Amino acid sequence: MMFLLIAFGIALLSGMGVGSGGLLVIYLTLLEDTPQLTAQGINLLFFLFASAASLLIHLARRKIFGGAVLVLSLCGIAGALLGSAVAAQISPALLGKLFGGSLVITGIYSLAREKKGSSAAKPQKRGKNEP
Amino acid sequence: MVKLNSRQSALLLVVGGLASGFLNGLLGAGGGILAVLVLSTVLSSANRDPSSPADRRDVFANALASMLPTAAVSAARYAAHGAIRIENALTYVLPAIAGGLAGALLLDRLPVTAVRRTFIVITIFSGIVMLLRD
Image (cartoon, rainbow over all chains, first blue to last red; front, side, top):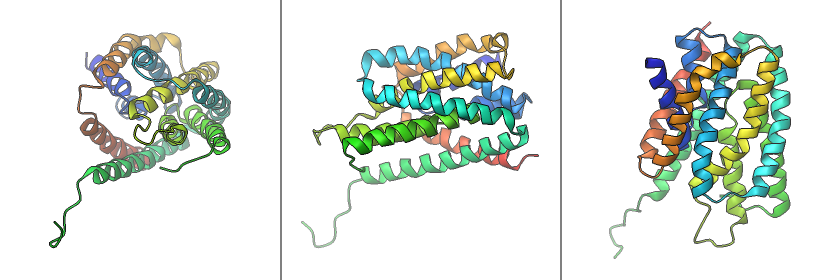
């Protein structure tokens, strides 16, 4: 039951655009002791189901730029073929470290963007002599 | 936000696509943030009306659309390498679909910023744990 709730929550975050890429891998490797490569593979399938479902809603409500999506996805496929080939060759321990490192980097970057966005939205304080 | 011409935008899409796909294939996750960053830059550059910049939700939807085929190929390669079995992943189907639909439907109604910040903190903490463990 707990697992179903966790999976639902992670998919909810994904559907909202908050991001969820790392959470399921974290849960599987740290709490379920799943091998790193297997956890990553399960996460990919999970993402496919969650994202396909949410994309149905987004396609109806959002503006899709077909040209940009096409180029990004075709190049993404080429990159994915190379990346998955590399993943199959390196040790699980190294893969885990790389995954952890990527979480820290993207997390710090995302936090910096959030803070930059919120400070830009704040109204500026007026000086003493300003009307 | 940096403004690019059409050639620069095309180059960014190619390089960004390769990079996000590589990350997705290597780590089974990620690449999405890169796709969002690339699309934010490209779509804002293409927008000719400065009073209506590309909506953040449009950017996310486009990033999702571009990452889906990438993730499908990554998943297929992982299965080919024997890293996953479809029957193991079927456990996740229903909660994944339900959660994904709920998230998309509730996107306009939930405090996304607060949720996002909490998620970022959890992500950084978890990343540190994974880096430090043996």
